[in-house]
Length: 171
Image (tube, rainbow, N blue to C red; front, side, top):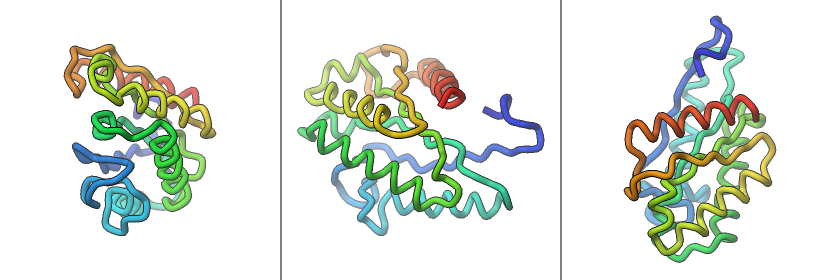
């Protein structure tokens, strides 16, 4: 990304991920549920606000990058419930983080070879595609097929990252 922005701009990464996180339940420390005042959503909003304040005037969130769904893939969360929770999360991020209303949303796929091995993986992958098709300035990006593990290898993650950057530029 830093290669495509003007030289007088800075890029900030605001990490808010946590392994084993869920959109549809779980304790606050591993949940993106927007109703928790002490969950990942609240942490993400607070970290984004702090980063924007430090970055100074005219700062904005250019993109929300998301690769998530493994926790729900191992359960029984329906496509409709997950899609609704995901849409709620993205809309809440866009409204509660200053200068984020027009941020692109790029959803990276879970490892496809792993998705094929878990009970609910396909439903969650379909949810990612549905949500990206319903939101303005959003895209769903397929990563490499993978090796059957829940996580991408470093080289696979770099491929997914490159594809997510391409989707961001087009969004």
